[in-house]
Amino acid sequence: MAHRMLPVISAAAIGKRVAELGAEISAHYQGQPLVCVCVLKGAFLFFADLVRRIDIGEGGPEIDFVRLSSYGGSTSRGRQAVFTKDLEVDVAGKHVLVVEDIVDTGRSAEFLLHVLGKRGAASLKMCAFVDKHERREVGVAVDFAGFPIQKGFIVGYGMDYAEKYRELDAVYELVPE
Image (tube, rainbow, N blue to C red):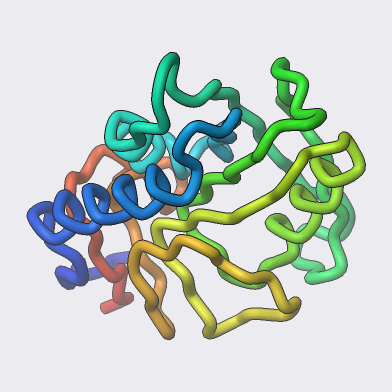
């Protein structure tokens, strides 16, 4: 299917907002044990830029990665999430910041926060590059939001369409022609 790409968020705007988020997160967690968890694949560019902006004191945050997949009907909204790559860092007694590319329906974020809470995290916060409310199904709070977007299918800066466009340094809406 042919499509157009309409600019939504420029590379300059992304750089500015990531710096602001890094400062907000640094102030919030200053001097505390923090684990930053990147949700693969979509958040990898945002995560790399963000953690370089987080300054919480000596040693900085621990970092780790998870990857989620869902099983069930291929188009069912009732699908269940499972880990295809789990954490290697113990989060018990530590503050955990989950870093997502986009919180859309909220189901994956809800699942991940629930599991990490059961593992004894001292606190759980969510950081999302894009906080999108168009299809939100559960009441997940995004504590540190990069950009609120109401609707549209977006790609770039880690987010993809059929594994393409992740490398773009800006965000675009993919519009069918």
